Image (tube, rainbow, N blue to C red; front, side, top):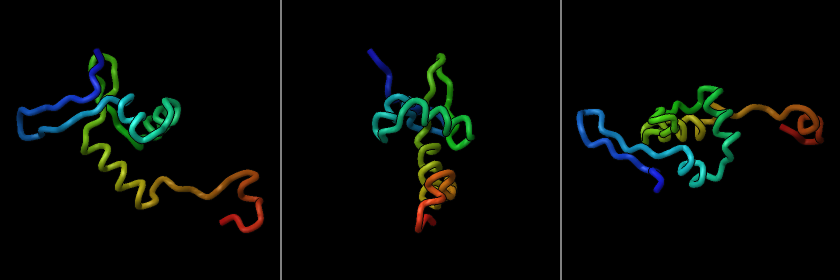
Length: 86
């Protein structure tokens, strides 16, 4: 039995949480990519019994920041040298 979603129904800060593994499967990123994003401070998980979970608010905040281009950067290396690279 795996725990993918947790719903906290008590208190004013109620929130739905999803396990990192379930979220990665939904968005199609690898464990290494998720690790890099957490290390960069782009995502902040909640540790529950040694397993990372994300709140819906945290994932919404990440999506807003990503859509605004906050995490984009110019190509480096060979990609930057290609003709027409922006």
